[in-house]
Image (cartoon, rainbow, N blue to C red; front, side):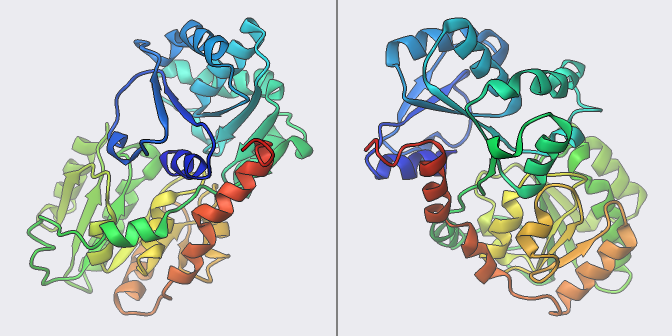
Length: 347
């Protein structure tokens, strides 16, 4: 969203970035041309009235709402406040997969609420065709209301930041091949399968595994690495808002997820020319890799097949996917958003 907001502002549109809670790690990347608005709510659930007050004062032409619980607040605000802005909502994940076992438990109501209320949006943007089809098949949204727009990937920025040094004992200096994973340490990302796959890889090749991210499963993953006897060859450095430095110096990037929406880290690694291995999870991976043309696709949860694909990547048998990554450019995404948000005549 920062990339999109910056791109719209650069084209001369007045853009507000509205946050329920003013916290995060990307503030320094937001253009000075984007107006940052903090509603001052203690949590998203209490941002309804502050958002209504903001909208009545600011009178936006169009609102693009992101993340499902935030989107519900935006819809309710428009209905309760009788606001007349055009409301487009962006769905970032395959909804039917995301919430059945979600914690906190209260979020498990999101699919039901989406079925009831998403129809009140003026348009629905899905980040992949998988997400779009899920909304049509399972959430009673008409096909003509849901459009697919890929997230914008700023390839030039990624290439530039990737030149920065990495302060990590395995990367600096780098002596042994490195496999990289990145994402929330959460059951969705299924890093347990990646650890098991890596244990198989170590039987054939001496290498290292680095998993970037933080989350509730950290201790579970550390314990599993110890149980597998690979804890001295695995590291969890934590979250890095600019993982491109690691991607550039890794030998293979692995996405082990159970489901996604449009996995940005996969496209980012591709932009840097890294061989990629991904699970065949719902949520855009087949679209990104064009059914395996640009990388290896393995069954979800299958450590043996994942290990085989990682070994192929380490052996140089997977393609360079950098050309495909440019199909997800900022320019293409912004052009589609201008059409859907009906902004082309609003400069």
